Image (cartoon, rainbow, N blue to C red):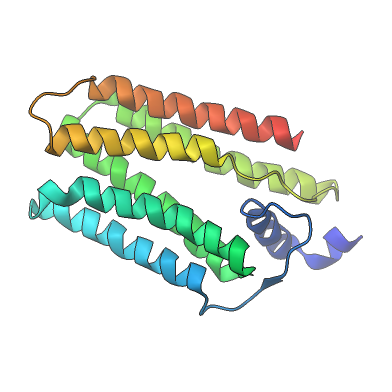
Amino acid sequence: MQYIEEGIPMIILKSLCNKFVEKASVRIDRRFCTWPNVVTLLGFMFVGMYVFQFVTGNYEIYIPLTVLAIGVSDFLDGFLARWLNQHTFVGVLLDTSRDRLFRLTFCVHMFLVRQDDIIVVLLAVWVLHDITLVVRDGVRYRTATLGRTPAVNKIGQMFVMLVIGFIMIQQYWLAAPFISSSMLLWGIALLALGNRAWFWSKAS
């Protein structure tokens, strides 16, 4: 009954929060001014810097470093939240929004640079990834079985960020690419699908 009484918004927020925690019980509050949230906001700033760099063409040589900073902020905010026990609803919303904004920005950037069909496939995979989260939480709410969700596969996310970083290094720092960017983009799509399959296997 507790799942029905709390309402759908609270249930979904708690489910999203549980993706970033490893303990079954953790203090979740509504604070905004926490160190993890500061790091996440810095991540938004780096995404904005990334957009400025590839749209204007200024400081393009530093794009790999900007992408690295975005990846570090993604890792660091979750680490600080667990270490300092500062898990907040606002933090979850900021973190997921920053991740989705970066994915969209990366796809737009790659499409402008390459105009490759794989960009559409990759964006579709990431959209499917997010839709499955909403569907899963809706099903669990309906059946009143929503509980602790498995921790997100950080290894899969790390490899995706590493491949994205390597694409940027090839694009801006190397005279000739070691590996085709199209192959690397297909690799990211397969990693994202694998990460989703891993999540569902843990959730079942």
